[in-house]
Image 1 (tube, rainbow, N blue to C red):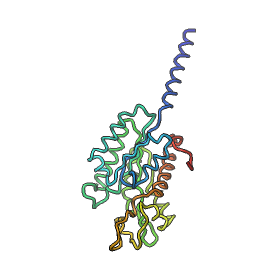
Image 2: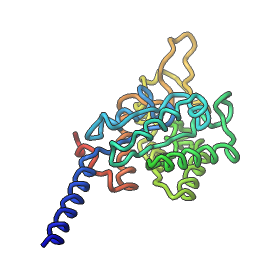
Image 3: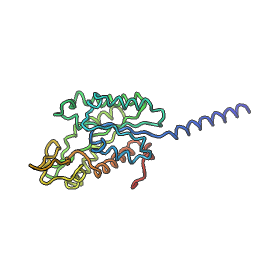
Image 4: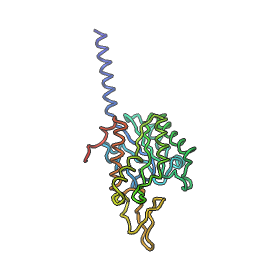
Length: 259
């Protein structure tokens, strides 16, 4: 009889522990550059889709690369949050770099073969070491068309991120491939509506992705990289779909489609 009561008590404790763990929220931390950051990327729109919006933290910052994000101490904040992860059932850290790792950006550029892969792998390893779940994201496409064909100047950096995800066996969101295909399909005119500001008259698409203002015109916020509200919402939905496919366990953490 005592043994039966003991068994019932142990079972009750186990069920209580499972229920308590299930009540803990899931947390998302976003790490990246301006294409993910507030006011210029999709990160805030993504967080708005999470059921408990306060558990989604957008730490992406414009102009940062896989090197400068760490050098400025921004990664220290992420690690501090992960050290306090006991209050959460799981913490997913979405990591997206590449735009500012490209050549020609002093203090930010990284070598594609010797530095960028090491940086991305180090982020993965350090998230794992603090019991977080690293999720690698290939860089969002720029929206630069030449003769009706969308360029993909970020393809080599996307390849490195894919290889890192395979080697480290972590979830991958192939935003570069998916966004490139989507933007190519919609065409240049529609893609231009995703920018922060409307496109001024007679603005060519330069190799850098930055807008060139007509002579004498006021400076415009339009460019072929950053996102206004429409673009942010569009690509946030894309990232949400990719994340649900890569990590089915998080599907219930998002609001129903259409909300």
